[in-house]
Length: 307
Image (cartoon, rainbow, N blue to C red; front, side):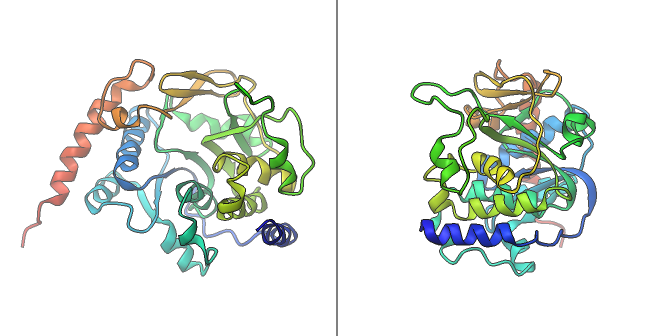
């Protein structure tokens, strides 16, 4: 497996980046979501963004068969663009690895890299469906910490317990890199990327996630794949100066000036989707309305139209 992976990675690194698909709009938000729970979380995220005054266009990415029709109708009515990742790749004549269906595990993480790489936005703010912004994030697109390198990532929580380094040595070596000590691991509940400037790194990120049956043995899901991809091609990226903190149920992430901007709710997903008020979430006021409006709109979408 390692030899096959190394050969595929070497070919990708030696190849020019693949074409940039047609850009629909300059800036926008991409939310990977699919299935009942993450669809409901995505609706909470959309409701929160709009409630905070964010008017950026939104794409909801999902895999084939993972978006219920009534829920899809709600997102479409709200002005979101739904994107089937499998259909998008098929239309571009991109065939994932033949054993993709056998891999199974982690395909949702793979979706995130595909969504950013093939989004209709030139500049993408990726937000996990379980992310809850504390403020309108639109200003991040104009922050020099992002505009200079064209990419801005957020670090993971500091190492704890038996972990003594941000990124284990094996992760660097297994992709052919010398270990870079002191580099902070990434937390991919939010990413900000100018695709026009980082196509090659994005292609490598997609490849690392596509080979997840191998790479996920030495990294945790997609998050370190972004870091390794950027280092493999020598691309630059910005980071906030302030480390994240955990405030139940979320990882709190800050902008370059140290202000809280995102809360990635790794816990209490069911409660958030159900519209419960959670004290630790700054933008908790939107949750009850999001849950209630989704239920009402889905019922309306299920009613047969006039004959």
